[in-house]
Image 1 (cartoon, rainbow, N blue to C red):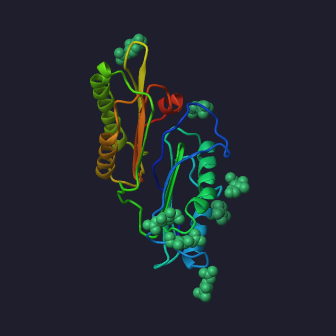
Image 2 (spheres, rainbow, N blue to C red):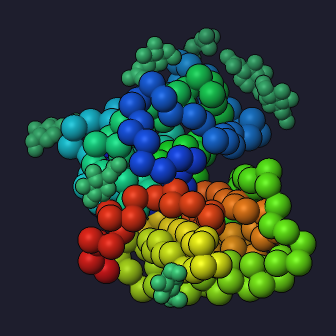
Length: 252
Ligand SMILES: *[C@@H]1O[C@H](CO)[C@@H](O)[C@H](O)[C@H]1NC(C)=O
Ligand SMILES: *[C@@H]1O[C@H](CO)[C@@H](O)[C@H](O)[C@H]1NC(C)=O
Ligand SMILES: *[C@@H]1O[C@H](CO)[C@@H](O)[C@H](O)[C@H]1NC(C)=O
Ligand SMILES: *[C@@H]1O[C@H](CO)[C@@H](O)[C@H](O)[C@H]1NC(C)=O
Ligand SMILES: *[C@@H]1O[C@H](CO)[C@@H](O)[C@H](O)[C@H]1NC(C)=O
Ligand SMILES: *[C@@H]1O[C@H](CO)[C@@H](O)[C@H](O)[C@H]1NC(C)=O
Ligand SMILES: *[C@@H]1O[C@H](CO)[C@@H](O)[C@H](O)[C@H]1NC(C)=O
């Protein structure tokens, strides 16, 4: 297996703040595995896929940077893939999430050559096509909160959400981890929390395009929402859904 550079990728956006997640607790948010291209269990592709997945859950993986990409096998059976942990999660949570995703991938997507599995703390992707350093905005998913912002505050809220996330996007694009999270006041009593992240293998330009696509599709009349795409994601909430201390101690 030729392991590519260890790089990067995307992730997400937690449901609950500061809840210690054990590998048993993870909830798959969404999986995208079109059955347009499938493989059989005794194919070389399957062997290569298992090799690649094993490398992602090996102790050597780069959980500290929260991103790794790789490639296994020779054409025409090459598999490329990556995992991305949310920018604020610890190495341990990253490792747990990736192990969980790797384990679940072959049951959720039993014979599809291409898959994206989204969890709160990580995303796992693989494909028969080269997905590395490639912007992908299909196969996305929107998760809006059920609660609405009061109608008479929706315009102001929308402006604040967009301004905050666009500011975060500008910062993320310029950072090595392609990640940013920030908090602003909505009312005297309520803060708005926003988070954006791209897979760090993207160019700044592609990352920005991805984040703009994601941010512009977010519903903003809700008290929170997230939009997950293979190459990036964005989220806002009126509660701290990411680890604030992990973000402020980060050096961009
Ligand atoms: C594999 O995919 C094909 C096409 O979608 C499907 O018909 C078949 O049942 C699948 N086989 C398994 C073992 O999941
Ligand atoms: C893909 O697979 C799912 C589950 O096996 C099946 O329900 C669906 O109809 C398939 N889609 C296509 C396009 O074959
Ligand atoms: C496995 O591969 C062999 C040879 O390519 C083929 O004859 C056989 O049907 C395959 N078995 C399954 C379960 O796909
Ligand atoms: C992990 O790293 C060690 C030492 O660098 C190496 O011997 C081992 O083969 C690696 N394991 C995998 C699964 O890459
Ligand atoms: C992997 O999945 C199987 C069943 O799907 C489960 O029994 C096992 O505990 C899982 N392993 C991990 C490490 O999550
Ligand atoms: C946000 O609200 C807090 C508490 O009301 C206040 O102390 C702080 O100055 C405000 N920050 C900004 C940037 O307005
Ligand atoms: C949040 O991040 C800080 C700094 O990295 C860490 O010490 C703390 O354990 C994290 N909290 C949680 C709940 O993960």
